[in-house]
Length: 293
Length: 293
Image (tube, rainbow over all chains, first blue to last red; front, side, top):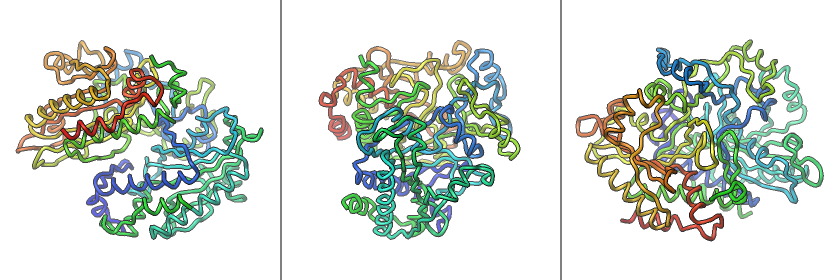
């Protein structure tokens, strides 16, 4: 159990709106953890890519329709001088802490809901001569009804390893990726189980995507302590290959990803090994062994 | 001159809404550049701290009033089931690419306008026994009327070194910080000049803060090529110490910061040393020399 006081003592600065600031030992652990994930990614000679914080809404219509309850938009005031003046001359922020908005500009940008979306967008129109492997990290926003430090946050860091290739290449990648996570978890003594999962669709009972995921699992989560998903392995078939005109062997590429929720790893590591840094496992040594296999 | 084709060839993936994706040599240069800044920060034994992507609007009323044209808010739909259903059953995104919003929830979060704001917030209420030095990096959002790759972006990475202390400690820090930047710039052959600057206030002619900054410069920018500000050195006197009840020697702490705009350094380095990575200076070696002085 990680009490708030234990977590604060090792560097958590919790923002009650659902985000974690990290300092001290917890920040060092987070940096090591991400280094370990990048080391595991090197097993596939993954290229690192860094992307912007938002995606164009026009490329996310399906996502917006499926997850309207989770989405966060980037919004600005309409830039007309009179509108800005009306805002600046007004209360700006009301007594409840809400911004006293005047007219807003059209909203065209969505704060990143999943790090890998940028990769498909970034490789739009490419013809892949071989399977491609990319690793990327981004801050993802997912609104929830309640937040819990490191376990469930409005914004959190997601590190992903993405494979773009044939159906066989992506299937092999997922088998290897899950085995790599199992090996890493074993070496750092962090027990986890893979379980089939579905995405948190809005009105799941009416959503065709939800039905499809239940019939043919395309998402598996690595859970700690029975319920906390530390990561997921996802097969998208040719969904993104088709949407972004990425081809491999003359047909739309298949894609798959392995995603790590960084703050949840911190929670699990501290839960399992205690709040004292002396008791924490050597993540980089373990990742080095996994990458070398 | 960096043409768009040159920059794309070394890894820029420009998002026309005003953000840069980085891959390949340009990402490697960005990572080295940030490592160099952290190395320079070690000169003051700065503690690294990592913060969330947003700040509470309630703590930024003054900023919102001064820079309403630049601010970006994080917005979500009102979470009532019927409101979400109306959104999901609607067009979601219209023909112009704008989100077809239904009712939105009260806006309480502002996307970070400056990385150091989180530091004052994070150290609220502290009594400092000695000068404190913190380094932090965040993605900052500032809306502009036009964007230019790496030079002027809607969102960009800002690395800061912050000093919290007495008036003398913060003044000394700024002298040393500017000298450190000069030394670093000399070693990597990147000519720059320090010039007094003012913040881009809304209606500057009517803004008391703008008048004050012109009378007593508290902001100096390190400019490259005559106009591109690569960084700034800022003295806040006890503005944040008072606002966040941070004290030093029994009175509100003074604060000062040295800020680096990461993408602009990439632009300047490539402009000065060309697009071939072989021609780029050894940033870490130079930073090591600066830190050791």
